[in-house]
Length: 282
Length: 303
Image (cartoon, each protein chain N blue to C red):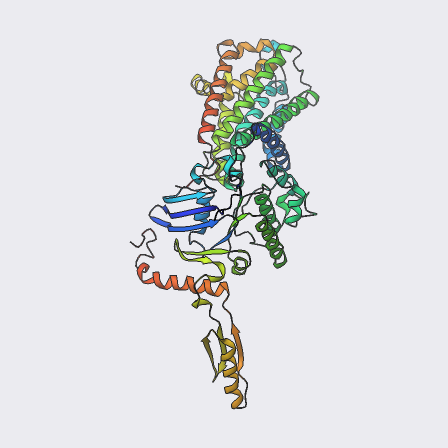
């Protein structure tokens, strides 16, 4: 005897467009969690502000740049700290954050739900955009209001800042996701990722003037994105007369776009191909 | 017609040379609650994680809601509810934020407030998860497992850290889900919990099923024969009998004839826990001679 009550199929297709909707919801969750974690707020969010304050105060008696065009330490370090902030918010923050989430079970839980990986990426990207934008606003605000740095007045300069910022943040965030698979555990994440970020900052013209580095080190730095984020920010915030201090006496913005774009594409491919909710141990 | 929600045939999982799961077969019918029991390291969690799609298997066939977990997509995951063993998440979001966010992942989610009430977290909605006690965090885990209205719910030691009252509440919640037709796969170290909730169960030891069947018939009829126990001549005496009242009367009469009363007289009906411990003990006895030589090397498995 068979009853003919139709049983509903167990698995039915999910509605379209949910990846974007869930991704936007994730941005809210990510940003909320970010600002509730005091140590990330301090070490990632406020770190560049702190460094700007230290450099501006320590070198307050020195002038930077060509003798007749010299500017204050605060004005000189403003673009460098903006670039560092973008790198920290993306690569360092996300690299450590995702490695932690993988080892504490957060990602394992997500992996057991119908959360699309793309939505998770959108959430992280959105978190970096929100936090990096606020961070940039704080850095620029402190430079201008506390240290009296004259901000650019041309639309061209702000336009340069805008694209360097957007391209830099996107590339950094994607590279942060890509690099998060590198540490074997959450505990080792800071030990693996912070030195990478630190070395990049030293060779890319953030703490040390790029023109003072030996040519071979400049060549090494040319391969990495931070050097181009830093020179892009300098192009936006430093006086035109500073261009002669750059390699080949040129900002090389087009090269910057190409290098950052290449890292963005490589990062996207690596992130999408290597990202796993959990490490399957065989 | 009842469908089979979970089908496991000849499941094997090796880690290096070690067989964590060594040939397991069982089915779970739609709407059934199935308890997978066994000591730590017996292969329970490996088995359940293969069914959930977290781990790949070495050999065997597995179907979960008609799908091979290795190929389970998001649409398949949308019909599962997974309560993992407790985790150490940072818990920076509040109870309500977390449950509402997870509700948004599922096409036919339950009402968030109903779920909060069902797991007994009313009044704690606005507390960040990291500030909850262990038992309360576990309730959040359970809430996240049921919020998507799963057809199949995995519960891996769900009541760890619950006080007795919270466990009773949890049992009521699970009975409610059963009444709605949810299929449930439960692992637990609380045998009374399995006896209360499960329809069928399996006992796993050393990567193999040593018993499988209706939860109140596990271990066979003989293992459930009542035991009459009393003290006589300074020693404890024990006898298994299907007619305990008769035996008690006989013992009492014997003592009464001598003008006394048997000390510590009791009738014991073996609980699931007694049956379970006998099964694990029997398994240990049977494997000890075979594995004694390789026990220290760790990587070898008996042929």
